[in-house]
Length: 38
Image (cartoon, rainbow, N blue to C red; front, side, top):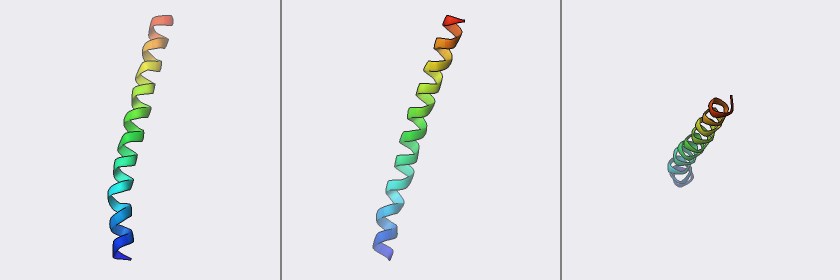
């Protein structure tokens, strides 16, 4: 149980951070495109 928790613990936050950064970057680019096109 301890090893499973240890393995899942470091993996989840890093994945979440990567996804949030990736989505925020796309969101920023989308906003810039809207501003320039509008």
